[in-house]
Image 1: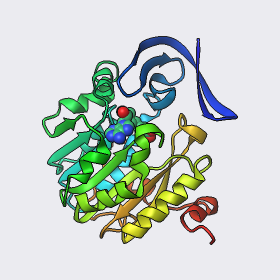
Image 2 (image 1 turned 30 degrees about the vertical axis):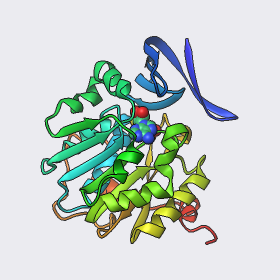
Image 3 (image 1 turned 60 degrees about the vertical axis):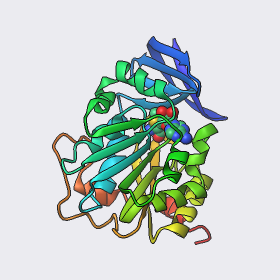
Length: 276
Ligand code: SAM
């Protein structure tokens, strides 16, 4: 049996499925966990690959450690989305973090990942982690000056996730951050989603004094080349914090990768400054 994700009308990714471990329709989406020959276990939502055992470490390390090593003393972290637990797992590696709030709209994603993807979702059992099941766009509207770092681990900007790529949402993120806070959002592929990256960058740049794009390689995501957009009230992410945290347990992130991730090829840099 084979699974194909149609990433664009004319292109997709296909992998050989050994077993369908779970499949259901939750109140929010179709949720499937596949055991695949090449990528190991794969979480699929509405037909789109969200995370795989094969390459999740790249995405989760780069979403978490770049901002957490930019802020000199992060204590309170908010994760929006992230129902597979991988981002929370990486945040927990930073010993100085005191509280992680994770806001996931679909309880069933957390429950299913806790059963089928314990390598990621065991983070939900940690006492520092508090999970809320609600819309992240609404949750963040209610928060003022509460967080040092906010991580937006949203799926593709379709359906209810579209709100997590809106100007109102980024404005609410700004309000929810402390005066020296910063946030990062995954912002899709520089090959396939150039308009999205440009519009998000322009919006974040209108709100935050420092806005930067950085990159990583995620083979199972569309085009295999991935972007993150960072908005910061004070700290420049290209200046690694003095007491940055690094562990041999990291498999992709290093202080050098942190610096290199911001070195953009011209076609990507152009997305952050349309019209040159
Ligand atoms: N790493 C993946 C990516 O880059 O596409 C995202 C993985 S994570 C599983 C995405 C999560 O966001 C899903 O569990 C989904 O239910 C959740 N989600 C979607 N819209 C949301 C919203 N408005 N508020 C909170 N969580 C939301």
